[in-house]
Length: 149
Figure 1 (cartoon, rainbow, N blue to C red):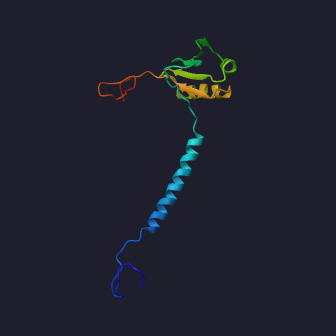
Figure 2 (figure 1 turned 135 degrees about the vertical axis):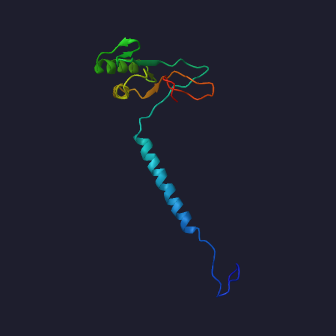
Figure 3 (figure 1 turned 60 degrees about the horizontal axis):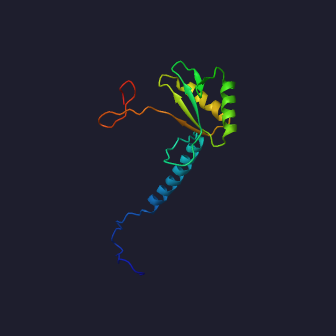
């Protein structure tokens, strides 16, 4: 007999074989990793603005959507999608490292915000962030404007 515990012929082997369990877990891990990569690649990539204490000033192109759904780009009204795309393309032509911030009212339809986001992406803008109002309660839990968390 080659090493290990001596087992007599009439005793039952009571050890648990964990090799199949480890094999299954590794296969599941690989499946989850591949699935996560596919899910992430289908999302819209966002580049949120970062604060810096020094360095060069970043050019920001601001798009505002009021509660009625009216779109303003750098405080100028944009009645049509074509005008928004042209304003975005002109700003991008001036600065290739252009950062865009979308400021949307909480009362604006989600579809309107996504439509504006799509128009900006069609104009070639890649670095897009969303502005928020920071609100917090005494316990540190953030709440919506209506008071619901």
